[in-house]
Image 1 (cartoon, rainbow, N blue to C red):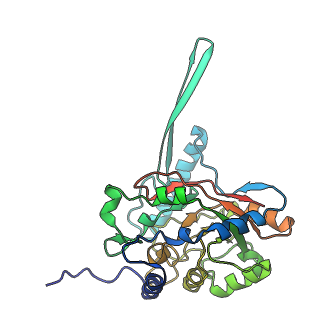
Image 2 (cartoon, one colour):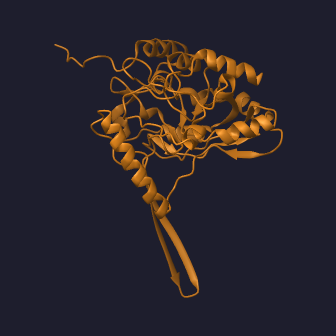
Image 3 (cartoon, rainbow, N blue to C red):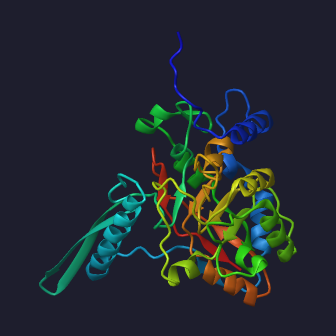
Length: 328
């Protein structure tokens, strides 16, 4: 008698996308490396050709480690936690997205030296980080297929991606600009139509292997005093919804960079876009700082640049903090 595992954790339409991906991209006996494998020589040359001014802009949010600032952040986090618990979220993961820095510095006569030890949680809604294939899975496997237990022994997605070289053309889609708003709101998730309109505004044809950069106005949202809720809260939030996720899968980007995450606007509050990690092996860079890049590219009269994202090659890592660079 088979064990009853309960309802399928994957949304039915994601299962359909997964099945089509397996038919089109998987080879018997060969582990699929997901969307990063679409970044080939042609994609890298497109990226290099998009550089016109020789300027570079970081898409990373700063990681705060100064003690006085951390104390303020801790107080704000406690207020935030009480807010989510008032919404019947019984428990939030302590330290999710945290970074701990121990600096060992000393003066030795006329010399000085220093070193540090860093411990971080690669995920959450704060730090800019790359999700590996071993981040979202189903049926005891990650995409590939990679057995979940390999994460305790020899899973090597980040090593493979680091050695593959994630450098390609980046195409920035400005959703608030085409909507005529400051930021994406909870009641209006980003749709396929929004993405079509934003892509049309660039005048660029998105090609497989390109880096899809989706600006949704999170910097303005937070500057106005709003807090972006963590993934542990099972409720809708600003972000990309189902039709937008389907659109992304159909365009086959080499990776996705965004500021807001999944809208979770479906009845199960499931992760519409993060589900593509398991379905098609989508490489995602969460929590990017995209407002300055959107402004800089618009001033330069372009929507493209060379996107470089070099993850640290750590065996068994489910994700790494990263500083994506856009050269334009």
